[in-house]
Image (cartoon, rainbow, N blue to C red; front, side, top):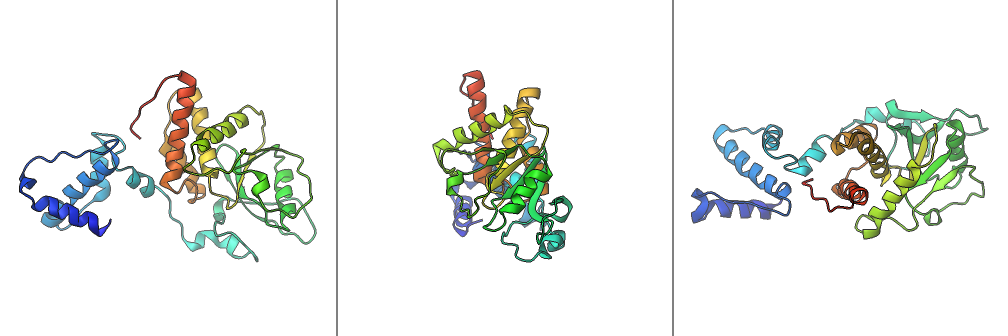
Length: 286
């Protein structure tokens, strides 16, 4: 919480209208509005009771209006792991990525290649996706082993392959789906491109895992997997729970959908999908 916000809150309470009913509002009436209400109530509770329970009060607010204080909800459910949960990757020499697999979700390469180990920075997430990062120069053989070990027929890249540095001339005997341009969080083209990737993937019939790959093994991978599962869920059940789907992904890799921007991108893409299906404008409180 910023000092300027606290100063503004204090000045508001000392003004002459502090004893009257104060109306608060924001663009959707849930994010900043919920934050202000929670701070006001909890600040007073702290002064009188000398203790506060943030989670309990946010839960109480949501009984009257769903999704109040979205940031708290997203960050509070994100799992936290200790260094001891990543022992396997810490024992591997030359690990280049800061994002590594949890021991209980790590997958190993089973094919035998001389002078190559069984470790690869990859995990399996629900609906039979394998998430990994682009192979570093010299490690392409391990990426190909991952494809062959799991009989993967489809690789989804979160960015155009011409943007990815590669020094390998080896051929991938697999279908590769990629966006036509670099995906950025604030581009109007990103929503349509991601929706296109998901729609194209869902049209391909395969009983084997689908590999989703990015530079770090996290950025936009979670967005793609979440949208794939949510659109499938929406089509079958006509209802979805975005938070539960994201939370399930984050239990496997906390860095997936770890920013509010990516979380918002999921909502924007779902809104676009619904509009395309119904031909109507859709309004919802996130």
